[in-house]
Image (cartoon, rainbow, N blue to C red; front, side, top):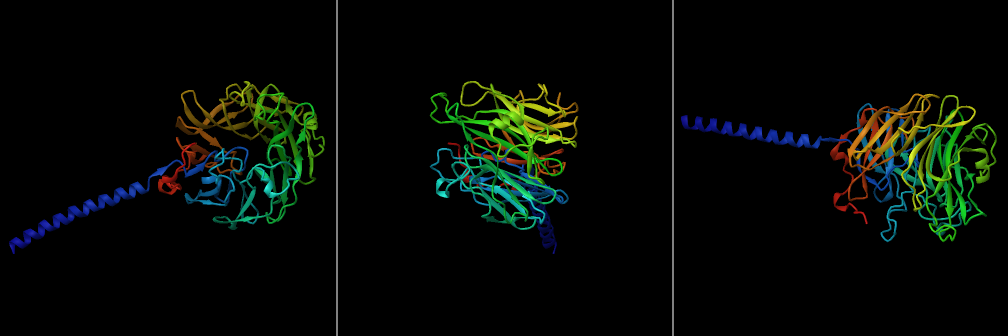
Amino acid sequence: MIFNSHVFKILCICFCFLGCASTQKDTSKTTKSHKTVDYFADNGFGNAVAVVQHPAGVYHKGITYVCYQGELEDPYVASYNHTTKEWKGPFKAGVSQMGKDPNRKKKIDNHGKPAILIDDAGYIHIAFGGHGGTPEDGENPLGNHHYGKNLHAVSKKPLDISEWETLDNISLFGTYSQFVKMNNGDMYLFYRHGAHRSNWVYQKSTDNGKTFEEPVSFLKHKRRTDIEAEDSWYPWVSKGNGDDIIVAFDYHICRDNKNSQDARGHIPERHNLYYMVFNTKTRKWKNVKNEPLEMPLTKEIADKKTLVREIVNDWTFQGVTDVDSNGNPQVIVLVGPDIGAKRSGPKRIQHYRWDGQEWLKSKNTDLPRGNGDLEVTSSKEVSIYLENETNDDVGEVSRWDSYNSGKSFKKEAVFLQRKNASFVISSLIDNPHPDARIIVGEKEEGTNYRKMYLLGDNGPIKRFEKETQILNKNKILKIN
């Protein structure tokens, strides 16, 4: 009996140690599986988001919905519930024609990044995948062809990002898709109707995207007679006050590829800065002085009626605009020197505002070099959400505020910092929640992929690391 009692005690002690060891191991597993990271997905592809294809996100009934270009240039959608702190997705919303051809010289096209909109019935819409279509798609009556079809995908259920269907109800020749929804629920899809030598158009839907009216041109491409080139445009479109849609745009000299007058041929050369307004109720266009504009707008009329600033020696890129409560616009644009190469020198933001009589240029030499979006709170208060690289090689996403109508800016908030990081940035999320204002992609060194972040006033919204691992790591494509 004494021997058996001793053995029993030893066995109890052993089981106790085994139990403790087992418990410690399980705790370790749990801790590891609940590790959080700053990004919400790892499969951003190429330039996964941009200011021009927009909005890339929308806040609706307590949830922020975001879209971006994912693996093989297909559109992906994720959502974040600000009450429950729950992430969903990302789910693939459609299949792009681009990004699939291994023999194509330019492996990533980047022109078909998605834009997102939620209609009044709660269905989520994505426009994506186009760079002008191909001759096999038929004749383009408003421009020329290039690659990929512009597509329109809709969620199968309201506010559900898990299942999608692609509808055949917009022109497939589109690229640079931009969605605008008005207060009455009307949906507008703006895009370029083809490759560089094409009109810019909009299509309108009054039935929550089930059907769209035929494309209506508002910027006209046209052959020049003085040089071997065509007029081309790059607008940025957004909702203004009331029934207005506001447009900032710059001019692209689309030179012939074999141009004896310019050895550089066709290069991404843009100039000038313009602004105009579309009243969706009257369907009339006007300039900042309320003078009517004849549509589609030509270069000659644009120079005469809509010019914010003539910029001929330097190059421009990506105008963005917003208006105050009185409808007075402010506009930013990137500007860099012509250095005689196929691209300009480094570009910096220039800021302009309409004071009711004339366009005033701000000095704002305190802004760093970078790209971003503009938010006008009042005639005096304006913010720029900016991605840039600091002098010590730190990639940064921050907000710069001005309280004197853009005469000077001060960095007020930093949302994200990474050493030696390269970021791409979206435009501001539509109707943003303070915790989710902008989407950013950070390049993964040695790959074509980016980690995707959702940033707001408190920095990045975190997620469990395991949930962010969308890619099959064994199939990561190396840069060619």
